[in-house]
Length: 433
Ligand code: GUN
Ligand code: ZN
Image (tube, rainbow, N blue to C red; front, side, top):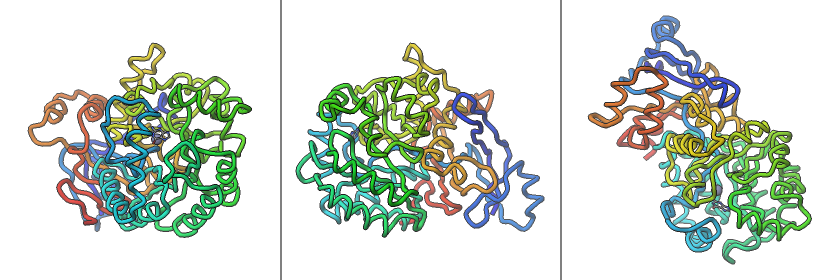
């Protein structure tokens, strides 16, 4: 099949080097779930004269978005105003997550969550899991059914949460081991060891997390880091011999190229250097950081140190599933920081696609429209008579058109989504249903 559309992706080594590449009348030849050829439509057509053509009129066809940090059990808590991180966890979010003890409820929520991802144009994600193993299994099963290439893992904590959410190091090891065996590397699913944060982990639980990574070197790792000043102080009290927050994880072998640390709003220079040297990733979650009042991400300091970052929506502290909105929030928070980075439209697209794919260890697989990549695609198209349509009619360049999409396009403008060449969503209907 050939998709004929206006095609655009971001290329380059980082957000500051990112450039746009594409064809206003482009063709993507898709075979066995992969992009087998890309270029001007006439040329692609000539090379594959027998292929069926589907024409996507209007809008832009982009690589699917990659969310580097989003919570499965938090769809229902989006928009709980008025609290900072620790109060929000205690009063709103941990009680909501306790309901995932009910497996049938969790399975319904898993479907809702995955639908919300694809309908927002997200085609890959690193997902923070539930504290309950059956709920986590339900998420993996539903992702496999939908064909969603999910990376996720059981959230673990053995102190400072609610009793119902607490595990023990022994149970955490056994439940992780069983989930890894059942799901990791199957149906496009990947496993990430997921201690919730240092504040809810004993030394023994962190030790277990490190042991799992040593036993299975191709696993991923995710947790939270340096989000909120009160949280950081509490972690320092809990781990008085650690040099800083990152060092707590480092002592257990948890800092490396397959690790993604959410937030890092308040790092010290040593931590930035260590993140860079270990080639670890940060998930920058600007809507959450402003929503909870956590702070404004020091992007320039990350860039200067060589610490890599991608974008995470961090739903439910984040306020929606759309990486378009998240990228716009990243842009705006940099505008209001005195030392803020002036991000281009190409940089935003790079962050929403290529950076996330790299953070998930899938840089060769996703994030762009090159031949050989998985055919993960999002078609953004303005609604008739919408503000976005009016702005796009005036756009003088592709950068301006893309800027308008980041400013105005959200779920409703996602017209269709393909994952690994399979249509998983068309506006108004979800194929998997
Ligand atoms: N730190 C520990 N748990 C959470 C969570 O659920 N959301 C956010 N934003 N930070 C956390
Ligand atoms: Zn989070």
